[in-house]
Structure formats: C-alpha cells, structure tokens
Length: 121
Image (tube, rainbow, N blue to C red; front, side, top):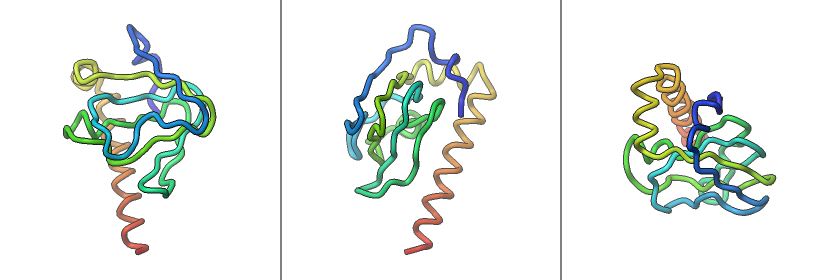
C-alpha cells in the first residue's frame, strides 16, 4: 500500500461503479491508478488474480514499459481511483525513494504470484 497523499495534488479522479471496469486487458496503458475508496479485482481473462484495497496501485507496468494493460480491473464495490500520468510518476520515482521501492515491490509480488500460477498449471 502506498500513502494516498502522494497523489492528491492536482489529481484526476475516476469513479467506477460496482461491476464496471476501470480498464480491460488489452486496453491502451499510459496511466497508473491508486485506489482511494472501495475494492476492486484484478483479472487475467476471467480469473481473479488479486483483490485491491485502499492504497493499492494498478497500471504501473504501462508507465515502466509502455504497452497495453496486461489485466483487467473491475470494481467490486463503488470505487474512486486517483490517476497518475507518466510525468507525475517519473517525478515521484525521482523525488520519493519510498515510492520507487514500493512500486518495485508491488511489481515483484505480482511477478511471484504469476510464477506461482504458472507452476500450478
């Protein structure tokens, strides 16, 4: 979890109703999102691979390695996400070591989870 106050200055907020998608697998990337309120599920295909809570980040891969989203994010309850564009993302990486290491930790945890799923078959 990343402190939400890092993102609230001049922030663009996206509200997503329960059952609706923030984005879908294959959609163009370009923004990272921080979950401010509610809960959401990360899906690969129809399989839930992670449940998001307050402070969780998604979409970070598209800012580190440009490309389409590798998963979908669907709201479990009504959600509010703060959008972080590439300029703000790079500023936070350069100016806030905690932020940079937290993003790396999230990416490493997701890579381990994907590896475990692949090993299960």
